[in-house]
Length: 97
Image (spheres, rainbow, N blue to C red):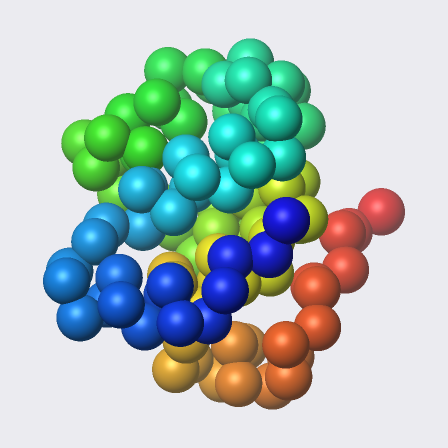
């Protein structure tokens, strides 16, 4: 499921953290912490801390989570203004082989 752009705009205005959007995307996709952790090659604890805003999320992790959850809008919430976000033109980034 893709997060509506209006929701993202409202989140920025209210200062919602990226972790909130990560959790929403994960839950909308029906993924458990364990399933996302396995897909993203990280630990359940790391994702939990990221969702709670206790651990920063790198740009590489944001791309991985966008791919794993099928939610490219996560990148817009992560940054939205960097050259990578602007250049992709709303397309899902490709997973590396």
